[in-house]
Length: 518
Image (cartoon, rainbow, N blue to C red; front, side, top):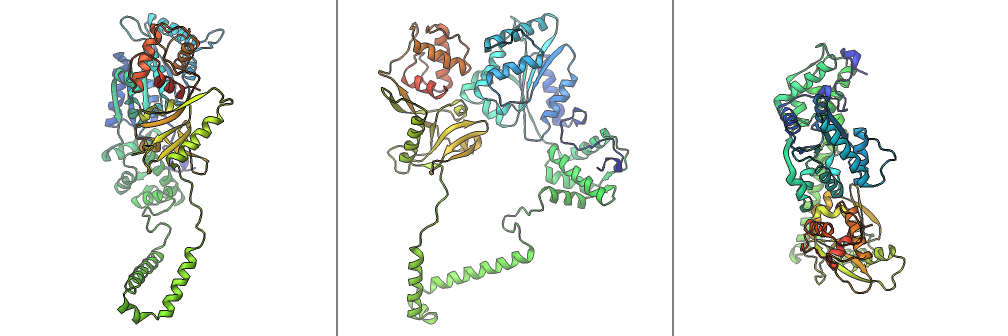
């Protein structure tokens, strides 16, 4: 709309991650240097983190434009994928074609390994970059670690870059991802722009868009931009775009502090951020304040009226009696229904857990079940496929104040919790991590005697355990035989989830395997 008015070829403040518009602040240049160093030195794993809108995606695209043609690259934006979808997407991005297409993880990995070996033998290298990596599940991250094992005796065949928000650091710090975290040799946190970079950033984008200097921002305007954006590039773009629209409407070529203030108010919806006066005019606010003061005075006066020597000055006995009668009637009114609560007590949470358990099982004959309680790291909840309870602080079954959150299913952005009215309520990942107090519990069914599985055994139960581990990202071939490979993966699984790592699939290990299985 305003591009021709100001003499631009295109909108200088679009929110799309165009690498041409990357402004290399001190932090962005350092991030780019870390990427180049990690790739050139074949460091294997690189992690770049930063807040929302700090320019991570733009930086990724700019970096990919700088690598030479001998480096084959795969860029993945959709991080809400399964492990097999990840492998399929990687092969598609690298242009790997097989006929017929693979039908298993092994098929995809074999095709990828063949491609990487051919690329390496011809003097090239391969780069896998995953954006929004904070959304990756533990299973997918474990699969990524397995991909990094594709190597020769001296060189890594693929370099992997994980880019994400600050939650990615917390995710990688999980005990179950320790092996992956230890492989990361290059890390960088991308910070917002400094105050002194604001003018350079704005003028850089104006120049790239074809500006000829007939639009000016005042120093006061730059100061206001930083005050609102705190150096966040996405916010800067939004403010400047709105400010230019306001200037265009007013036929102005100078963007002052006042125009920036008006733009900020537009972006905020002209809502005062002070919760005490939100939606009130100044006159209304004064009126409300006076009313509140009067109410406080009346309340204090009523309190003193309980004193016999004071009350006689203001009230007659018959009036006091009438007031009391009215209060009694009010107290007997039916209370309003309460908002459903997702913090349940022991009895209600168990009853609803059992209802969910029965709903998923057609036949309960000859089925025994235990209520299993374990200490589990909160980051592991994304792998759970069965209903479970989160124990809040002090939640012992013998405690009358015990409280639980009952999770019916895990979702891509958190989970669904069952409230006191038996309805599902969405809860965020942040909410879950905030309320997690280590202990969780769930119902585990079994038939007959609950025996342990040990190395050397050959049975359908061993095959079932192998399939569960394989689907959860532990690479082993299901055969029904409890071999050395199975033993090693059981040990790893037990360590990842904080169990005693003895390599025996006993009741506790089997119960946890049930929790992560479909």
